[in-house]
Length: 431
Image 1 (cartoon, rainbow, N blue to C red):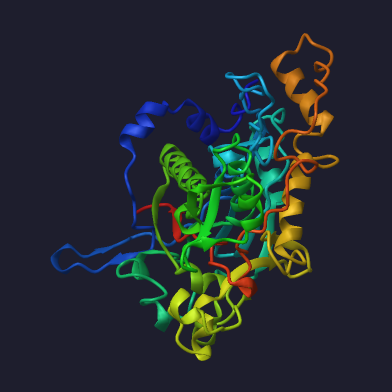
Image 2: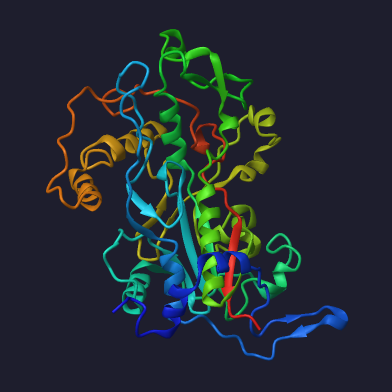
């Protein structure tokens, strides 16, 4: 019996040809119960709002989650001289339904429907569980953490800019619809990528400069002087941007869009509720309330902020407020950025990222994970090959120097790089 047998809807979904789904993909903005005033072309849905079923939502939740193990197929020795190389930027070995730069998996999802607003935990992979209705629903229930007992939204009279943009205020986040709202944590990948840059061969390690401070070395003069960094090879911190981490969210949204099409659901990728308002940015909380209730940090204003950040006076300091975490109503930490207050300092945050990869039980030292991968790829082998003994790779906790680059913590003159994501999607029945 196949996983879909016994459920007509799942059977239809599993049988839908991928290329046909891709070819016929279209945006469907109008949900059941909606009205679109357009003069002579005005449309009023003859149907009442019809929320997604628990199984339909469970399928979509599964498409945001982890699906199994993956291993980077990378060389361990430099082809030119045979010396050990880093080649280990991946931050986790759990595979997801969409690719992620360095497998950072910084994308978190919130699910918003008539029953409430939920944070979706990223459950451990369970690749051996059948894709049947019972297991999909059970996994979805495990993933959902209720953070609000109502649909996240602003008051009816405030559905205009900056909360919503143009016609989205009339079509998005309506009764009966389901929203999957991504929030991307850039902080862990930012630290990881900086470390990866610093594992390049001698002469190829760039000098990080602060483009918000007259392109001066970003706290790395010591390593320019001792030759670890190439002083002639300069890399502005601003040029790094979000380090491509946000691409994962785009891929996941496309997966959701295609799957909704295959399920016969109306869906669209769009700018729904303004993310700063949704997260509870203090610049907007007085008018809109706490909303999701993220923790925000506002940097203390200093005179250099005038030319660095164009913040002329202390009373405008909140312009640079940015979110650093979210806690569940019962106190469970749901999102913690790699910066204070989750860590005492940025040095501690950097050390934590290194430990998570190379420390005890880390990504590259967990023998159980490695054994699972070998068994999955090579079932005939009873155990993984013995690891080669060598000195710690460049970039490991034992070999990596503590290079103090500009902090991503606002209290230390940072740039707000921790969170950037505004695209959301809605899914509902059309009509």
